[in-house]
Image 1 (cartoon, one colour):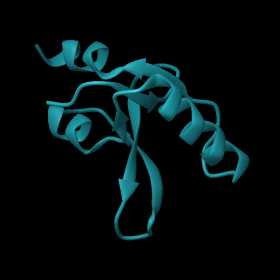
Image 2 (cartoon, one colour):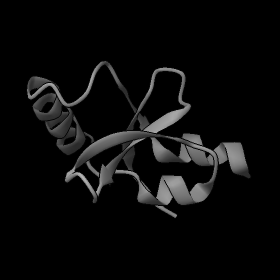
Image 3 (tube, rainbow, N blue to C red):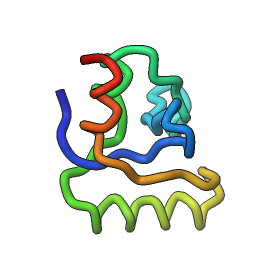
Amino acid sequence: MQTGYVMCSQDLSKVLCLDKASGGVTLVTVDSTQILNRSICLSDLTEIKNIYDMLKNHGLINQLEIVNVARLYKKFY
């Protein structure tokens, strides 16, 4: 179980995960806690905002929300 902040879609249905095959990032539908365990999760809000800005400036992501991962875990408990 992770703690901290993740980047997710505005409806909280998908989280941003590293894609080992392509070496990039992808939005993955949250259908289990295993997906949340694979997500990019950082404990510091400033750090994740910096990464969000960098990914957005490189055109790798669109508009995403930064939320506490505990909010997404609540769906399963």
